[in-house]
Length: 181
Image (cartoon, rainbow, N blue to C red; front, side, top):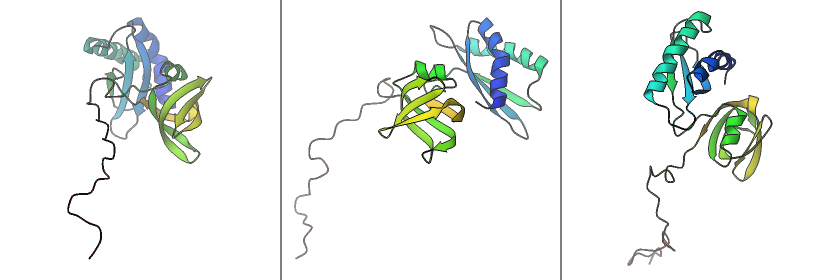
C-alpha cells in the first residue's frame, strides 16, 4: 500500500471494525482530476453484502469529511475482496500460505518486478514465494501489489481440461509424407 493508503487505513479501521467488519486494505490512485480511493472490507464468518458496502461507505465518508486526508475531489469505492483477493499485510499472506499469488514489486529482485507463485511462508515481514521452482524472499515493504490467483477449476467456475491422449500431437496424417520424391 502507498503511504497515503496506509494513513487512510489507520484512520478508517476503527470505524469499519465498529460495524463488525474488517478493513483489509486500501488502494489510492491520485489524479489531477478526480482521485480514486478503494477500500476492501471483509466479514468474519460470512460473505460481504451490498448492505455492508453501503454502511461502510456512509460511515467512512463522514470520517473522511471531518479529517480530510485527501486533497481535491475523489471517488470512494467500497468492495469485498472478491475471488482474486488483494493481500496487504504479512498476516494476510500467512493466512493464505499454500495458495497461488501474483506479486508486483517496487524494486526488482533477481531482475524481476512481477512474480507469480505459491506463498510458502511468512518470516516476520518477509513473504517467501516459490515461483519457477525458486524461492524468493520478498520484504513486505517492497511489495507494491499482491493478489491471490484463484484456481477456477477447483472452484467449479471453469471446466477441467482433459488430459491429452498418449502420443497425441505426434501422429501423421495418412497419405502425407515429409519426403520429397
